[in-house]
Image 1 (tube, one colour):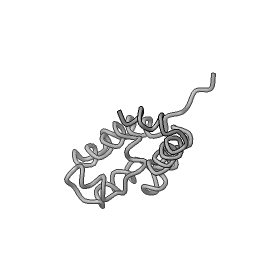
Image 2 (cartoon, helix red, strand yellow):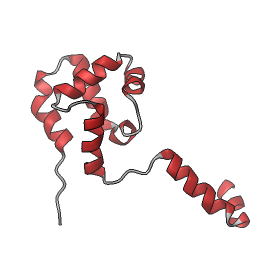
Image 3 (cartoon, helix red, strand yellow):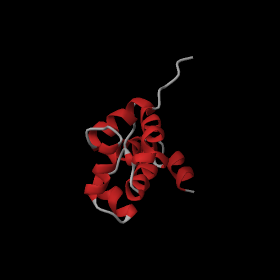
Length: 108
């Protein structure tokens, strides 16, 4: 069995003691919400945490990533290919439009 390397988790564990409380809050949020972060912008993450997008970027950079894009590429390697919300919706709609009875059952 191939073991995935958790680059984000490893960096967080090794550098957490160097982060300010605010940067640690951002880094912990990312760690605990990795899937959601894959679809969020720095501004959206900042809004959730009541901080600035610059703080989000500083937290990401403090963990050794070039920025949010670099972080997302690393997380994508961890998760594998990610299906976006719009792709999920499109698949559901296509499935349901092909069978009216299944569509009714799904809604109910």
